[in-house]
Length: 139
Ligand code: IDP
Image (cartoon, rainbow, N blue to C red; front, top):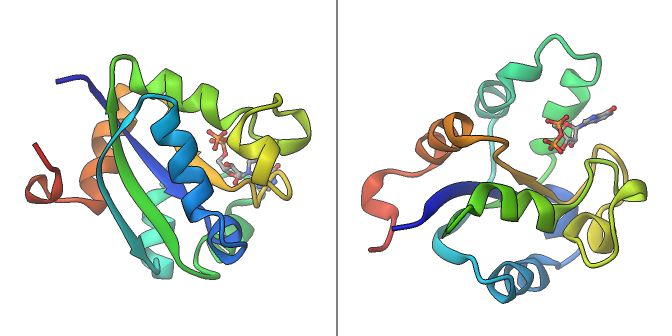
């Protein structure tokens, strides 16, 4: 089994009907989708998910944005999946993201940047289990 990482297709991308395009980019990159579902986060869930950012000035706005509409959360698997998915997403600010990345193609702003991906093995583990039970991951 390869490495697991956690992905969110954020509310702006869902609202813009980009779920299919983004899942296709993920599949085309060679990562395997182990689980996926659409959710509407509550404020408490979003605050918990982004707890590491709670001292940052944009925390309140980020939480409001993440609960502004449904998201698609997924678990991705592959060798080196965490870094590969970060590379596929591109820079946090879509204006600085490279051609061919998800954020370049679909991100609207540094906040509404279309996607989230875990930034390391420890966060990946926490984030996967925040939204999925082990029974929801296909073998
Ligand atoms: P990452 O998602 O590329 O890992 P982080 O710095 O961990 O970037 O920030 C988490 C999320 O917070 C970003 O994806 C983006 O949605 C939002 N964000 C980051 N910086 C800013 C900012 O300066 N203003 C508003 N939102 C921001």
